[in-house]
Amino acid sequence: MVAKILDGKKIAEGIKEKIAGEISGWKKKPGLATVLVGDNPASKVYVSMKNVACKKYGFYSREIHLPESISQKQLLEKVAELNKDDAIHGILVQLPLPPQIDENAILSAIKPEKDVDGFHPESLGKLIQGNPSFVPCTPRGVIHLIKSTGEKLEGKHAVIIGRSNIVGKPTAILLLQENCTVTVCHSRTTNLAEEVKKADIIVAAVGKPKLVTKEMVKQGAVVIDVGTTKLADGRLCGDVDFEGVKEKASWITPVPGGVGPMTIAMLLQNTFEAAKRIEKTG
Ligand code: NAP
Image (cartoon, rainbow, N blue to C red; front, top):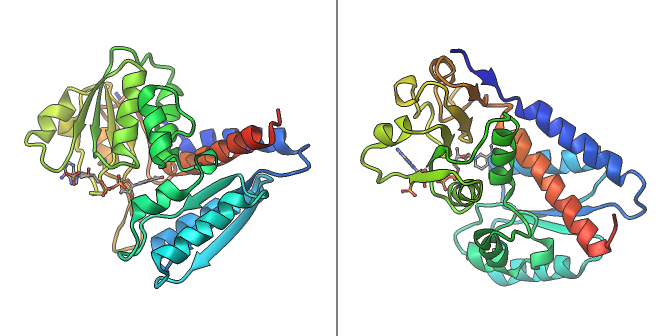
């Protein structure tokens, strides 16, 4: 079997075009504020891609760049200012933050109505209750990709590798809500290959190039690669050995061009939904 490619770039394009069409008649555009602290090169790239997408698809975007040395109090003040700003419907504070800042304190300070990244405790609590307000963008994109295969999810065994609050854990919750049987693996899992071999659906979210090899994959599995690691030659590499695994999987996402574009599309979707709720439009 040679896997079909889950083309995240194309699927994301469709989602963004659809939103752009819906907001084209709006007088007040959905507004996203991105807050970047410091000069982490990867964070700078992510924030810039988010702002470029906003502008291209008819959103208002405001890029706020703050110095690495900013205090927690100053950052909280900036968030409070954005919470009150009527032009802003969504606030995204790019992670990671410098060590003097308590990330949870900042994420908790974002008004839940504007929490388009979905990391506020209220958003995560509602997600667990099965009554989500904002679903974190990458996990939302992962589920969208899996559903776009047309395969039935109910009863499938999903194995997620990685248990971060921003990818692994929310993805596990969403797959449970789709009635999958879910296994979550992490760095202390003693038998990773054995666990992954049982999976009908594999979601790899680790950040270790080519961790998932052909030998670990069951014939016909759907394989979603969230991992992105920049190699010494500048290329991006996923957590899955794409060339080997595509010979066994039924569907597979490439890196780049799989989950990454979906994350941005879902950020626009969440901001669009935030604007509709706040402005009571549509
Ligand atoms: P993270 O917070 O560093 O979490 C990594 C997870 O992988 C942890 O749960 C860790 O386990 C687990 N892990 C580490 N080594 C392992 C191993 N050998 N076997 C099994 N599990 C292992 O990372 P993250 O923020 O979730 O991101 C994961 C990857 O996705 C990164 O490459 C990141 O760049 C990428 N990412 C991509 C997008 C996108 O839009 N494409 C968005 C977000 C993240 P412990 O919990 O035990 O430490």
